[in-house]
Length: 331
Image 1 (tube, rainbow, N blue to C red):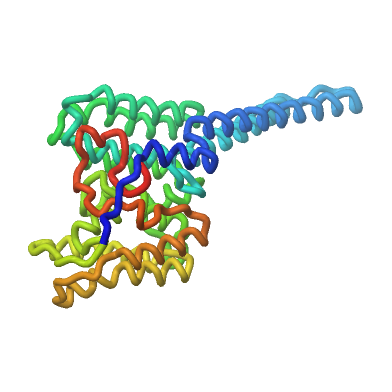
Image 2: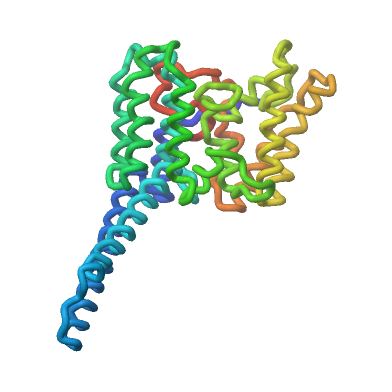
């Protein structure tokens, strides 16, 4: 059977440019819109105050005078936080958000960081830029994550991964009231409530930085190393990885809010369960992933086709691969 080929991430982004905007342009548009909303509300408040004074011959009290600017500022802050959080986490499309880039770069830091610390510093700058108009508490949590990229990658294998997780969860906490992805990053929610599009993104496009794989590869690429895209013998000595992957898929199956995606995920999990039952020959994930891709398309998530998936993806990021995520069809 012909081997699946890896598509260029840059080429894929070019093809998909009509479907989404970059995180930076989307953020700018939202923030500009938020500023206009705040200005409109403030102007309306001043006009209302003027009409009251003309009709009653009295000036507003000091408490009344401060009410409109305070409400306008709160509205502007809400819009700015919403814009920043939405841009960073990618809700609701989850297509190429900055959070995914940050995960991929954090995973490659141990290997590549000492040779190119400036590259990781730029990632920190991008995170701070995304939150530069957000309220101060969110700016602070974004700053902690940004500082990690400026300091830890240069330490290579000694980079503090626990500090990254803490900073990641801190920023997620600042966005959890706005972003569904952030809320699930803080803690799992109730079964059957995780948006199917987010589940699809977790499977096809999100680096395994904070999973048991602890690398920049997405879940599909990591799974191929265990049970293959096409039929293969399961490598010996990977039983714990097989168990952990089955557990991860089980959690996604319980969480997802769409029955068709759930059923497709169960088929993806089947080879892992068979290995745990003692069958060391896998029929591969080609057909189950094709079914999952179809189910994801139906809920609005454009997943890579089987022909776009790299069945030989190398676990871990190389220096050449540090600018993207190692997976089939996207970077």
